[in-house]
Every structure is written in C-alpha cells, then in structure tokens.
Length: 159
Image (cartoon, rainbow, N blue to C red):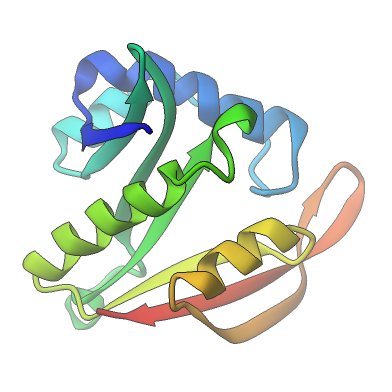
C-alpha cells in the first residue's frame, strides 16, 4: 500500500513527470502545455498544497487543490487535481490522496471541492462518484485536444 505525505519541492520533478504524461497522452486534461519542475515548486512555494503517494521510494501519484475562481466570494470553494501512474490505479492510492486533500481542505475552512473531469474519462467519473462527488454540470464541447472537442463534467463534494 502506498504511503501518502505532504509533498515538498524535492517532489516537483516526480509530480511533473506524472502530470506531463497525462498532458501528452490523454484527454484527462485538455491542457497541452507541459509543466516544468520549477513551475510545480513555485506553486508549492506560493502555498498551494500538494500530496504524493509513494511506495518503495517511488512517487505513484499526486493530488493538489487551488482556487476554484478568483475573488473573495469563492474563498470557501476549491478545485482539485489528481493523477496516478497507470500501474498504481485501482490500488487505493487515489482514495488515500483524496482523503488527505479533503481533510486538509476542511481544516482550512473549505466548504466544497470541485473536480473538472473529461466526459471521456469514465474511470475518473466513477472514482469521483465513489468518493461522494456529484455531477452538477456538463459543459458540452468546451475543451479541444487531439483535434477533437471534449465535454467537461463538473463534479462537486461538500466537506
């Protein structure tokens, strides 16, 4: 079983490797611009919380959250990000990462967490539903990647 811990700047390269694989190879994110370890480390330095799941010294996945939208009126709502290496999926690391993330967010005064899930990501939709997230909106053809339009499903969980 993977161990979950708060990530630090030394984890930025491993997180970057995981997220860049997702960016390059999937429509889990509609972003097509790869991240750098420096960008991840800068987000950490600015106070954005990150967690990693690791086993045997290898980072298997990460989770993070940040502002849902700008403005003080949205300060109690966040949007999260989570990704795992393929071999770690379905082994409990994602659930453990989300438990750490939600516990931290609740302690920080967060009222609700949003997930923006690709409409093609059936596993992601099922994962979030199993964790108590409910679909609240389906934004048709708002993402474009790999020369195709993609739906974005917004899912929300109250803490």
